[in-house]
Amino acid sequence: MRIARVSVPDIEGPVFGIVDGNQISLLVGHPFHDLVPAGAVLNLDDVKLLAPVLPSKVICIGKNYADHAAEMGTTPPEEPVIFIKPTTSVIGDGQAIVLPPQSTEVHHESELAIVIGHLCRNVTVERAHEVILGYTCANDVTARDLQERDGQWTRAKSFDTFCPIGPWIETELDPSNLDISCEVDDEERQHANTSDLIFSVSEIVAFVSSVMTLLPGDVILTGTPSGVASIKDGETVNVSIEGIGTLSNPVVSR
Image 1 (tube, rainbow, N blue to C red):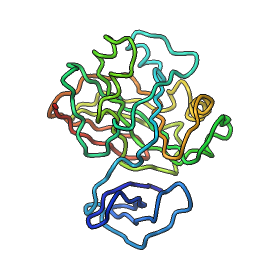
Image 2 (cartoon, rainbow, N blue to C red):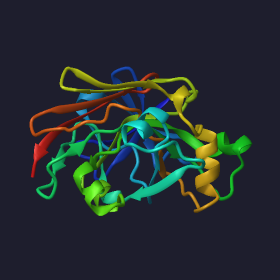
Image 3 (cartoon, one colour):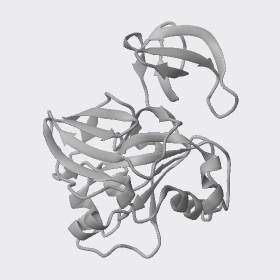
Image 4 (tube, rainbow, N blue to C red):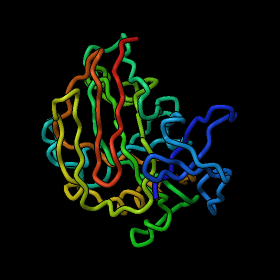
């Protein structure tokens, strides 16, 4: 099942719905309890896709593909490396990634994202699947020059628009063996499989929940494979994950 969050003409505020082909069946309320149909079915072309959730926090896992750790000149970590992106960095499919004037080297980072479905703390690896609503595509946009200059990651990854997620949440998916890729315009930059993750989805959820309470709608980015590179004004970044779809965002200068 695919759950989207959309803007609908003549309806105030975002609305959740279930996507089936080119149609969306609107829901009453949010998808973190029993799904209640609102009775309206619209064409996807008649609504605007938004970020599928607006999380209380976005937790990211660094260096979770060995080849990406190598291209960054580091070794794979012995336990997950976590950092946080602010909610204000989140945008949805079709919205523009805005390049800040402080940076001259902004990179794309294609990632599988976990969407948490239940309030949880200290979840075991064996029960991690019970607290996951589903999965979506993400782009951990990073000002690489600022990351290197600062010696840590907060500023480089926190600019507004630096966390595209979408286009929807796929709830029926095995995350252990999915092709993931990134194209900038027509050039493929990244191509890997989630089977190459150093720490699995279940291990990530268990680790993160041992540190902080996770709330419904929180998003965890699972790491990016090798091939990260600069994006420029006028380009379009497409992150595609098998079984989910494609997250597409144009790039503009501020």
